[in-house]
Image (cartoon, rainbow, N blue to C red; front, top):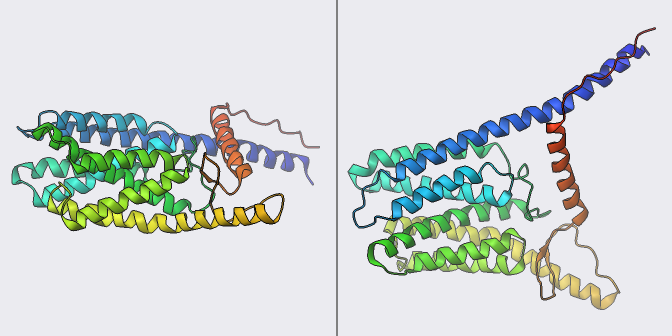
Length: 314
């Protein structure tokens, strides 16, 4: 074998890895910048609404949207979920307002839709696996958890918007405000893979769906229907996760009764039966491997690219 040929192949492999990592990091930075621009556009659009009875609501909403422009720049999965959930809420509520709201707000609503589509489209190709920092690293049921949490953050943003509007306009603390705060509290536990967070998220979603279907949620009728659908979807998505977690608890207890150590559950989540109950990833070593891989990607992206020495041919 020609040594020069082998050395050249080794040089190609040496250069391709760091370059591909650096290129991917550059693309992600560009996507985050575009998404931040969309978020700032939505923040500016919120200030264009003229609501005489609600002086603070547009400013609070604009501040939250401006904050999402910063959150999307981080590699935290929680920050990404909050940002995308907020933009999804803006997209849904602006769509309702564009077609069912006052004619004078139609143009601004379409502008908000455009900003939301830009932000969501820019981050759509960047998965939460790329934002690996944080405790949310499940090894099973990842899709239903991510989908349910995305919908829940969107619903929380919508509920809090209407809840703050009621306080601003009438000085009333209403059910949307309470449900929105309860949903955020439950999501903080679910993001950390805690059992109480899973149960709480399902409970708040079920309450939201029930009150929306009953017509007792203090939001517009079209928004009630929307929240009823999205909240019901969360219950459907999280139900198999809860069932698997409960099966894991039962299996763990049986294993502890029959032997000194409980059998490992490789394909499902489980809830520990101690006071600090949490949903445990199926493989802790796999979680650590993911974190080490993410750290290695960062080091490779920051590493200057140096050409490998090529052995002279003989």
